[in-house]
Amino acid sequence: MKPATTVFELSKILKLSPSTVSRALKNHPDIAPETRKKVLELAQKLDYEPNLYAVGLRTRKTREFAVIVPNLTGFFYDSFISAVEQEARLLGYSLFILLSGDDPNVEIANLKVCVQRKVEGVFACITPQTQDFTNFIKVQKLDLPLIFFDKVPFQDTFIKVCVADEQAARSAAVALIGSGKKKILSLFGNMQMSISERRHYAYVRAFEETSKSQLLTIEVATSADESREKVLLAFSGSDKPDAVFCMSDEILIGAMKAIQMMGLKVPDEVAVISISNGFFPKLYHPEITYVETSGYKLGKLAFARMIGYLKGNKHAEELIAESVLVKGGSI
Image (cartoon, rainbow, N blue to C red):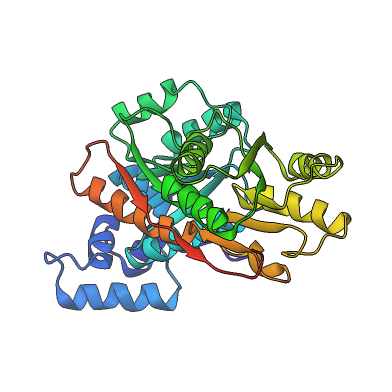
């Protein structure tokens, strides 16, 4: 592979100083039009591309954002990244993706990489085990823009961009209440996470306020496998549920596997509703009714807030991307 052409090579060929060539490439007004034309023509001929890393070291502006996510196995994070990348590209930025694997130690290491790499902003989705925010606070003190999204800290000292967790959970509860189902198995994620706590609170509150005849069984499932096992166990007894609520896509995948293993018909033998990004519910027949929590919408909102920070709006706040009920044939 041919080595990249440098400013020094251009200056040597043209018998100009490197600083003159550099300013000509930037269309600096101090450079004569004839000189600028010669430099640009040679640069094009030799496929010159600026060394963005070197420029970043010199100017401390890398034109790069970092996104820290737990994984890329779900379409929620894919769609979030897609939205951020689209917006970033329009403004001349690129993305640097880091995976935590739901490990807080890897999360801390990733955060240090962001600082060392001198990215211009960080989008972070925390792990379920993240309890110590010391390193994130250090990042704030460096005036490095930090936007938490989806799974966010409880503290109100950070900028957070979330889906409408309480609205989504309440919409799902209202749909179940209206369905007339009496025994509802409700599956929630890790209760140490603010996303699970909020959804659980709003969901249960909706039933307490409007329904006196429906029996809720609340279970925690932190993975698709655990969700599958919780559903299989619930249907192993004589008092079987007639509906299943899933707090997330991951939980939905496990629940539907169990339902298919048992040969149950949806919605005749069991109704199903989920909070979802929208991809997985459409894979089943009938399609699963779900409350949309869009990663794409969240990405757009998060990027807009990042640009707001870069323009001077640095105050802590929480922004919400609204959710909507999408009817399928599962209730």
